[in-house]
Amino acid sequence: MNPSVPSPTKSKRKRKKKASKSTSVDANKSATPSTSGSSKVSLISGGGDLLTKPKPVAKLPSSREDSSSLIGSAGQASKATLPPPARNPKKVLETPAKEDGEEHKQTGSAAESQSGAKPKKKKTKKVDATFPVRKLPGEGLNSFGFFNYTHYGVLLTPIIPAHKEFILDTGILAMDCEMVGVGPMKESALARISIVNEFGYCLYDKFVKPKVEVTDYRTEFSGIREADLRNATPFETVGKEVSSIIKSHILVGHSLKHDFAVLYFTHPKARTRDTADYFKKILHTKTPALRTLTKKILGVEIQQGEHSPIIDAQATMALYRICQKDWEHSVRQKNRGVDILKQTLDEFKANAVASPVP
Image 1: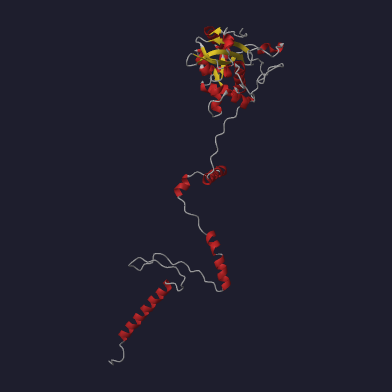
Image 2: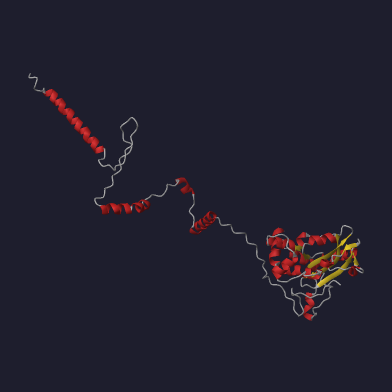
């Protein structure tokens, strides 16, 4: 065999080798993108397996106009096609669908909290002054629409036949007391007490002589002078009379705990209507003064100088009457639905106490 001529077996082997090389090169070329803008392919370290398929390559613009339009709309296009953030499917399923109104309220409150707006304060309950009350007929009435009296209890309103039913005890009374200071410590003692009916007619008004020597008459507020107590009724007598008058009655007053303290007796809580306690709760404030309530609710100014227990008692009765409906409703709720007002008036009628106190 001629050594210059290659053997058929060797030539076959070379041809096969070249064919295998060409096929591997074509495969690599097809796997590797030819453009420079192609995305990178991540490989496992030490291996040749592909983890992800290559992303399709965007077509490059052929002219300047195409490139400028592509650049100008790139920001808007990316924002518009941006997918929403993934949500937890469990939370989506568990959360109930909200109505439009509820969603609006929640977004509004969230906006207020982010903006730092202060939460709205709780509104105080408005006093319902629309409850119909019987108006006193005639002329010469005071600012409350009641019978008018002087400081010492002299009736100024002319009595007419139509007043017959308005001067009786109807089972609802208002009481007010004036005190003086007694002893070295100037402790409070009863010096005058007045009781009016629900139309402001005075059923009881007496000066009281304290058991202990008076050391401070407190005239600036009490209106009591030394001459007023010289012939005053003894305390024991007044205590018995007042106790029998208010029995089986609804008793109205302002800060009655102070009055009971100088009278040395109390009244059933369910039958007591204290304007200081009631308006303190519905107005959400500290204990209000009687003159503050009358000016704010009734538009009447009292206690500008010396106090009159008749006028103060009328003021508490006027406050009770315009709020009677709501007030009695709250009393029923506190007493398990029992109508205390009706119960008391029925007892009052049964005792046949239906005439003015002399």
